Length: 409
Image (cartoon, rainbow, N blue to C red; front, side, top):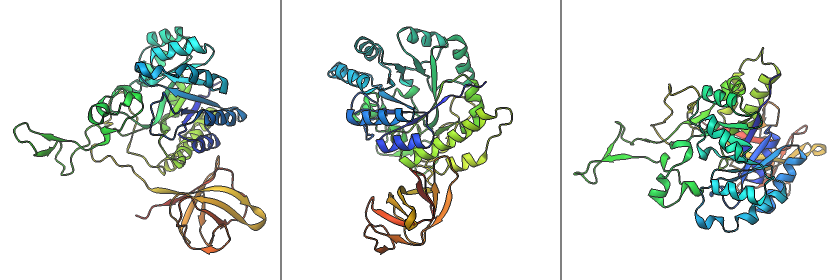
């Protein structure tokens, strides 16, 4: 029998957490207001973490909380109380990379499960065994490993040690994300949660004796995005990921939109379930990739999983491929009135052709024939951000259904 890996999704806010779980994630990882590596995400207060944990546990799903900064001395002030709060709230694990933070967690709440962040650069089984002996339950492997190397690690560590790896999302040009460019150029420390992503910026060469004369590194008048990685995508290789022995397949993206989370999670959920349910007859469904590409993304790469045979840097620009806009979220069905209540997220208007995503369902096409404001006045557009609108609809939409519109070419 094939052991189905956990599908682990990012959650930058409570809404994203609920959407990730609705669209098929088994667990989510979130950041609190302190000690995590995504300082610019919405992040969670302790009260919100409790709400998130309670919500997930009611669905028999899990919440992991990041504490993966590389701590300076003053970062430890208040950390002990924060650890106790996470244990009391019922967080399923903390994700960390600093040995000092690990030591404090083991001392303060020895029963709180610990996962070792990819920032710790674990690339071999002996290191994995060492960390396990220190009380680590799960290793989030370095992104630079191949599938073969992951398989060797799995074969040489105890069954009680779980292995997790990123399978989708933004990649960092630096080794497992341990980068100092942001700190050097902007004073914001990537290893303490404040990365400004300077790897996505445009760079030129300046010759020492010709100051002010900027020369593109590659023959392109716009310059070269020298450090700009493509996005990781292993959707087409689910069987190999499962066979490698991974416990958890991780999606990157706590800074991404609710729509992105729903789209990516549902695509991986579909392929993972199809493979585990019928591994002998499994064939990849191209529709899953078509769906996946409807979320904003850079060109895709398989990263290091198959070695270094493919170029993983995108030199042309640092922008995203955006073929669809997320325009609204479903709030409520009014079946007796043949209406639905939605909340606008991007501009749309009467006459637009939309697609409606639903959890565990194929999308349905929808034409906006009429629009009503909350006072039931007819309108043709929704000019106010997050305006609530009634639309005609026969039937019932599932909770957390999302509306998208294809961009005009």
